[in-house]
Image (cartoon, rainbow, N blue to C red; front, side, top):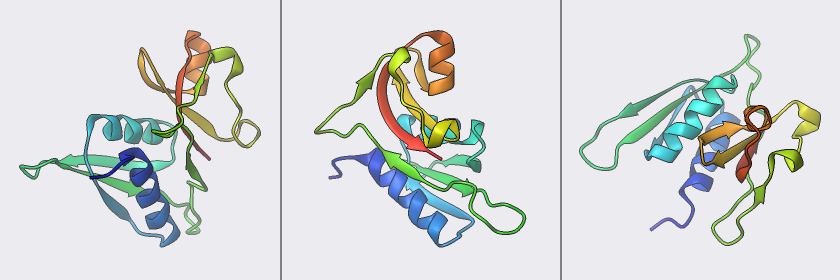
Length: 131
């Protein structure tokens, strides 16, 4: 049994990105699919696909690189952990890498980035940072 599946997802993506792999397979869940959607919308990954395997399902994430072969996703960090949840209002949301990265939030309106949360004036649990 895994204690923190989101941290496992982030670690798998970081490891595959470090090896410059084209794609990475992750055990699927609704939360992970929403995280992949946010990463795709922000331009950190190329695409994602949910594959049915008559068990839990597999989330296939296609990583993105520049034409010269450099990583687009430089970093991915889990902030709120099962043992220590981190919450923030929209006014106190941190900036990642001086505004170059994004904060991924879980709000009552679903997963969103810090920019969207500020626009909609909603706070929530800080899932992680991507830059």
